[in-house]
Amino acid sequence: MRIDLHTHSSASDGTDTPGDLVREAAAAGLDVVALTDHDAMSGWAEAREVADEVGITLVPGLEISTRFGHRGVHLLGYLPDPTDPSLALELDRILEGRTARTPAIVAALRAHGIDITEDDVRRESGGSVAAGRPHVADALARLGVVRDRTEAFATLLSPGQPGYVNRYASALEVMIPLVAAAGGVAVVAHPWGRGSRSVLSADTLATLKDLGLAGIEVDHQDHSEADRAELRGIAGELDLVVTGSSDHHGLGKVDHDLGVNTTDPEQYERLLSLAGNPLRG
Ligand code: AMP
Ligand code: FE
Ligand code: FE
Ligand code: ZN
Image 1: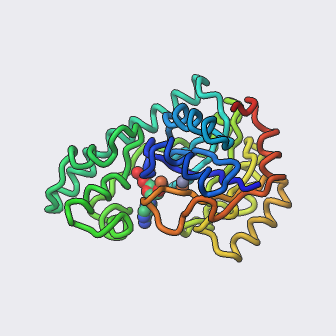
Image 2 (image 1 turned 135 degrees about the vertical axis):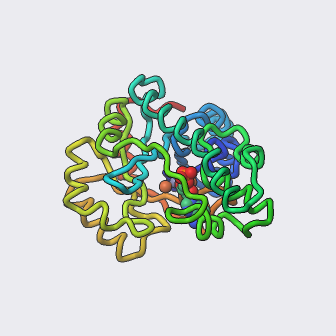
C-alpha cells in the first residue's frame, strides 16, 4: 500500500490539473493520494471524480499558510468539513491576502526595472484562487528575466529581495484548533524544512499538540536523514502521527516526484481515525 499525503495541483501552484494529478498518482502506483493545495479546496471535486474513475483513494486536504511568531509555517489539514463557516472565513481572509499581494509584487518588480504586468502573472495562475509567488516566478521565466522558479525565488521573490511582499497568514495557534473543530486532522508540513528547525522545537510541538495538532510530516525532501530520525523520535514521545509525502508540484518543483516519500499504512489509518468526517469515495 503506497500512500502520498501532500500534493499540489493547478488549484494552487502545481502545474497539473487536479484530474491529471490524480491520474498520474494512479499511474505512479499509488493507492492513496491527498490533494493539499495551498489555502484552497477548489480542486477537490475534479480530483474526486477522477479518483473514482481510476480507482485510487483520494484524501481531500489543504496546506494552510500560517505564521508562528514572525515565521511562516505550513499546516496540512486533512478531511475538514469544507462548509465549516469559521474555517471558510479564515481561508477567505488568506486568499484575499494572496489576491492583494500580486499587484503589489508586480509594482515592486516594475519599480526595480522589470517590465512585468498583472496580466503576465494571471496567464500563469490561470483559474487558481490561490495566486502566489510561484506564478510570478513562472511569469518572470516566460519573460526571460530568470531561468526558472528556483532562480526567481533565489534572486527576486524572497524576504529582503526587490520583489518580496508580505501577505496575511493566520496564526498557527488559531488555525490548529480551527481545523480540528471543522473535523479535520492537523499535521505540520515539513516542520524543519528550509532552516525552520529552530521555530518548531520539541517543546513547541508539545504545546501545539495540546491545541489539537495530530501529526507532523517527517519524510519530506526538505528534511535530512538526521532530521527525519530526530523528528520521528519526537513524534514517538508526543504520540503524534508521522506522515511522509512528495509535496509534488508537477513541473513546479524538482526532486518532488509523486511517491518519492510515502506514509506508513498504520500511520495513515490512525490519521483517518482522527478525522471527524468519514472518508468518502
Ligand atoms: P507563496 O505561497 O505565494 O508565498 O509562495 C510560496 C510557495 O512557493 C511555497 O509554497 C512553495 O511551493 C514555493 N516555493 C518556495 N520556494 C521555492 C523555490 N525555491 N522554488 C520553487 N518553488 C518555491
Ligand atoms: Fe507550493
Ligand atoms: Fe509547504
Ligand atoms: Zn506543499
